[in-house]
Each structure stands twice: as structure tokens, then as C-alpha cells.
Length: 95
Image (cartoon, rainbow, N blue to C red; front, side, top):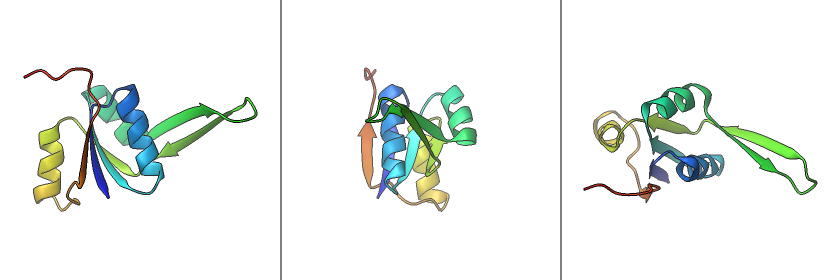
């Protein structure tokens, strides 16, 4: 499965990390600061474990892009896998 997540806020970033950790390829569209950092460092998630401690994991099974058009262009002409599942994680749509 190749998932396109549009909206790399808190929920979109977390969803991208979880899907990537499950072994699927994720393209995550977000703002330029996110694209720069996530593209370089991956997405790290910290969560409380069942004993009250913290555990962290990083996923790099994704591509960070700054627009949906960039994601589609990469999958159509750039040799990347086509997106099979879109996921919109945005607070509001402006038309």
C-alpha cells in the first residue's frame, strides 16, 4: 500500500509514522519546515509505555513533499509507486 497523507500537523505526522512503521510506503505533504526536517531526520514518535516510562521510534519509510502536486508528479513521472490510499488530515479546507 502506498498512502498519501495531506496535512503534516500533529495527527497527519503521527498517522504517517504509524503507517510507515507498519511497513507501508507513505508520502506526507506538509509545509516547508516539516519537509526539510522530516526528509532529513525521519519522523520520531515518543509514547508512554505500559510501565509509565517512555519509548520512542523513528520511521524513515516515507517521502516528505511540500504539495499534493509534487506528490502526484513524483508518482506519475518520477518512478515512485502510485498512491493507493489518500488521507486528508487538515483542520479546514479552503476552496
